[in-house]
Image (cartoon, rainbow, N blue to C red; front, side):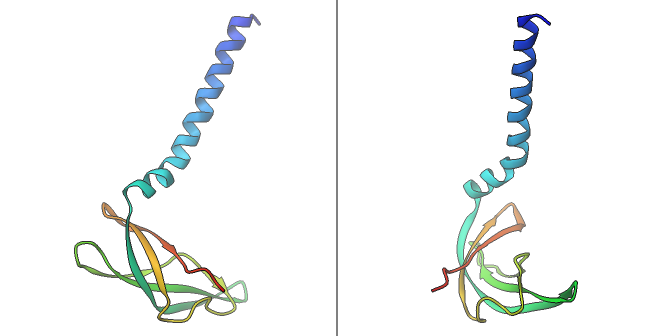
Length: 110
């Protein structure tokens, strides 16, 4: 195989790796750029049994920038018991164009 072919294959591999990274990480990177931040509060916890363990998911309530009150069942979870009491304030980051795209920032535990 000639040196020229090796260089072309190397460049194609690098381009492919970069394309895959952008494809996989792009939504994460762009979410932070367009996300709105508001305060929310944990209003309840959902519980369920999974593989013999009880898991808990927080229910978060917040008001978006248009004044709409939203109740969001978070995908975050913990085992055994809820990590924070009902009434705990959290930071909610949401995508105004995709209301289901929500990230919750919890307070640091002391």
